[in-house]
Amino acid sequence: MSPIDFFYDLINPDLAFLPKALAVAVMSAVVCGVVGCHVVLRGMAFIGDAVAHAVFPGLAVAFVLAGNLVLGGIVAGVLTAVLVAVFSQNRRLKEDSVIGVFFVAAFALGVVVISRAPGYAGSLQQFLFGSITGIPDSDLWVVGLTGAATLATLFWLHKEFVATSLDRESARALGLPVFWLDLGLYVLVTLAVVISVQTIGNILVLALLVTPAATARLLTDRLAVMMVAAPLIGAGAALVGLYLSWSLDLPTGGVIVLLLTAAFVLVWASRLLPRRALAGPGRDSAGRGRAAARPRFHSEAIDLGGHT
Amino acid sequence: MGSDSPERLNEGGRAVLAVEGLAVELGRRRVLEGVDLGVAAGELVTLVGPNGAGKTTLLRAALGLVKPVAGRVSVAGRDPAAGRAAVGYVPQRHEFAWDFPIAVADAVMTGLVGKLGLGRRPGRAEWQAVADALARVELAELADRPVGQLSGGQRQRVLVARALAPSPALLLADEPFTGLDLPTQGVLSALFRGLAREGRAVLMTTHDLLAALDGSDRLALLNRTLVAVGTPAELAARPQAWTEAFEVGPDSPLLRALAGAAATGTAAGAAVAV
Image (tube, rainbow over all chains, first blue to last red; front, side, top):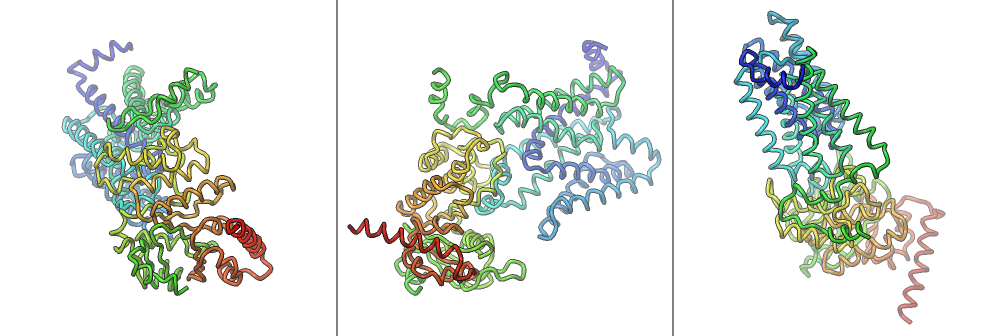
């Protein structure tokens, strides 16, 4: 199938689920890409994995009660994030152990809950591996608004999250509410995961969170560039992935994740080429994407250096 | 030790950091006991002691990050949590995520995050403070460089610049010389001395004898409690205070180094006198 045919299918009213799936997949990828930058830079990929699994009982309960899946997932994921943040305060336990305890417990709860529901096997597969059909119109709104709120919060607290990621002890010394910022970041990760679970699936969603951000990190030493590149990479993979899965009749989540992985490997391999073949790490991108008040430090000196 | 009492410094109204009868417990272990120390504006005081002596804990108490079980700490006459705006903190270098994709100037800006308040963006005044702080540590030309590309000495100066950005009255530096070569230590030592001369109170920790003796106005030998406080010359003449603080025997290389440093110090003093 050519991309043109794919476009016609997108606007075909008989295939109304397809543009909805595309919208949800792209929005999920954008939100996950931005949130994922924090996840990758803090080394908290495990928390992303944990939350992804922890939303499962929420989805299961919502499914059994015929409620909104996204809301069910948000409740379960946030509850797990709070439990992890609280139990991590204990000095004897490291965070990863606490995460290990709670996310498997949550997942187990989900398995038990969903086994009580009729049509158990089919719905289980849908949760685990995602599906592009059966997305209700209301989910478009829930995903769009949740994603927008997530991005707005990240933007609003950007400098606080960065300061905490750089150096927790100094962040505390500066009077930042580090515990609440951690909890807030967990909640944002949860939201990003929950809105993505529908199309990508519970198991593969971690890739949407981690792989674009990790790829972007390989490309740049600038946080601002990274936080633009990651969602672009994710959205591109979502678009191309949906097209490929539709035309080749392959599972959407799997195709998107494989595309992301291919992009990561390609970028990683390209970094092995001689440095001259690539743009230097953001020599001129320093001031872009920052507040207008940010002065350029000695850019003249650097530019002059380039001419001599 | 009487002349070093915080009371005396308080009378003059110059003690920026005043620690009185401080005791701190971590878990059930008492890591600080009966500590009295004042640091005045314009003074560079170095806390010296072995690993586990409570040096970092004393700094954390001054930052209001640990609650004393006895005694009190005040910063600029206020409770440490309330006096935070007056304190610049230079953590140990390994506390900072150097692999984070951030430029030097942006890293220094994070020192102003507390002052700015939640969600507020830095404006012209804040970027000027960052530029001033970078100029003060002579890193202005590296402002746009990613922090991951810096040397150990440059990284240490980034941390100092970040602490200086909010123009603190008190500067706390935890092990700033660890892992640096001697010339770099010299540059940093001169920097801390200069910062004190500009009217700041500077308290730093080290377990490096030479770094401590060179340039501090006063040394405080710490091992759970203050073993001795005095000028480097006074303490160089009291080897028993060092053996007590470091819990070493009379044949320790520490004492030979101390004797050597004391001799050099005397020679330098004589040269100045001539």
